[in-house]
Amino acid sequence: MEFSIKRIGAGLAFLALAGLQSGCAGLVVSAGATAGSAALQERGFGTAVDDTVIRAKIAAAYLQDSVDFKLISIEAHQGRVLLTGTTPRAKDRVDAVHLAWQVDGVKTVINEISIEQGGGILGLARDKWVTAQLRLKITFDTTVKAINYAIDTVNGTVYLMGIAQNQAELNRVKNHARGLDYVRRVISHVRLKKPPMRK
Image (cartoon, rainbow, N blue to C red; front, side):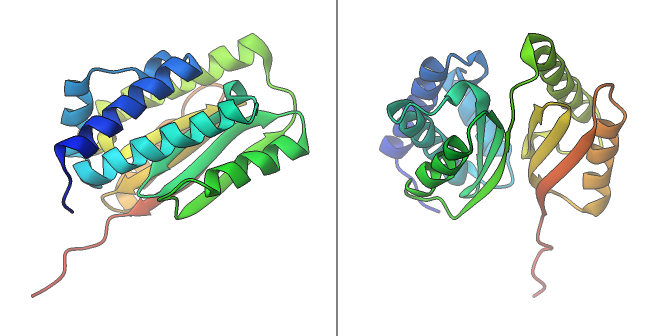
């Protein structure tokens, strides 16, 4: 896939914008770190930049439409968008999906937003802890290509998205998640890497 310096710059700018608007420090990373990690992912650098732009545009649409972005998390992978989190109103859940579909490049929207009150500060802290611990475990697991996985935890449910090298690798990631305290369920939207085409 061809991509230009302008496209890369736009993607990184959107990443910074999304981080500033959402108040989420995890989104604000250096351009060098972003470029380095994207280049190592199975989806490729160009696709990773496209996904960053998609994610930022959805976040911007939520802010403009007054959807409570603080309770809704967005992951984008190869044009597939995963929405997780909680909202107290059914209308916000519908609006969140509708707005995501309006963004160019979105191929699929996976709606995992639940209609309920959040788990409070303690619940949020536990979810952040689970996500961080799982990221740590798969990063130090030499049989797992951790960079290909996106992780989000909402009320004890772990959501996985990305590309697994094979079913065995995906099973290891799931087992790491299930072994953590406070984890109630593990839901996977991970795709298996296509085997190389034979000549």
